[in-house]
Length: 485
Ligand code: BGC
Image 1: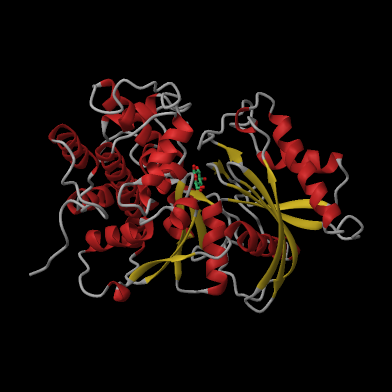
Image 2: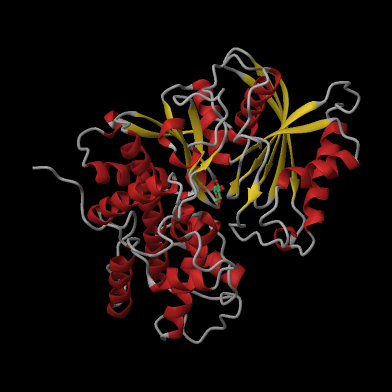
């Protein structure tokens, strides 16, 4: 008999024997709410495929399916020195990448902490100035300022940005808590290039890259079995190579030197999957997360799967249980009532708590939120973290299954990166199990035909390889995007 495992994921650790009936009932209700069973996943995948296809039509759909204008597979022979920058949620990373031309690369990097409140500054110039200043510091540190040649730069900008060519990125909307006015609707490349020029830095932005596309290309550079680049981090997204002839919305827009059978990297931006809320198993907490976010109605899939929201989901449930008089009774929850006070490191650390009495969890709640927890309460909290993390992993892989089924990939490597993938306890296992459940694979997991593997450095090496491919196209006089862009 085919055994796909229990319908409900079991608690990974600890017994529930001493949890009183009241709390146990709540745990069972949470299990019902937060469990995405195999049947649900398959339903999600089916709708996902339709939506991916819709995104490629002229009419378009919810999922942007943005052509990334990387029209070659890297050969591994790309060589030279490149700068790469990656604007993440908390840091700006600047990398000098030396591509050897022999499938290998060397990187030297520095991180610059984004000033507090930069994500929501009212003055967009501050963001570009900060990046340009950091670039200048890096050039000084690395003694690059005296080079005669202009250094080509690959700019990893991991937000939905439309591209009519590779060195352009018109921000559609901020995600992941960024909310800076007067950037949406604008091309961010000249905004940054101006600040670079003001400082007379010998740098030219030659490519704007989504982190997923960078991950895809960097991983393909070292492993041609790579089928997708995916990020499970603060945000969630995936990229793959499509074929120009299958991208209806590009019909009639391409220059003659781009053949119909040319590959084209697509940044799916599938964090916006199911914005109409047709198939995702949303709970009332997901609804609150959405309603209280700066962009309600957007990024429905991301809000259930990415690191930016996991801690907040946990917090919302705990506050509600307290308000119902079920736990943390009679305590001052002022701190815990602050939205987003719990980032993903909280559920991650709680899941990692090695002690039978969940002592680390006790410490966290006392020190950071000033509340005392009983052991049964901590058991509920831990179980809830498992449920939220497992659900995120299982839903997140629906994007992978959908792309693989759409493209007809039966085997291959899915290159994954991001803080949740790399750091959230049990995420990798739950993601692999999710894929197995969708496909009904049984037997030894090491023989699974499609596996998720740790990616190469997308926003460093990937951005550099893409910058190299872009430079080569420029040198050969080839078009970089749609006609006239
Ligand atoms: C962004 C994507 C990005 C993903 C992972 C999402 O919020 O819209 O562009 O790839 O996060 O970083």
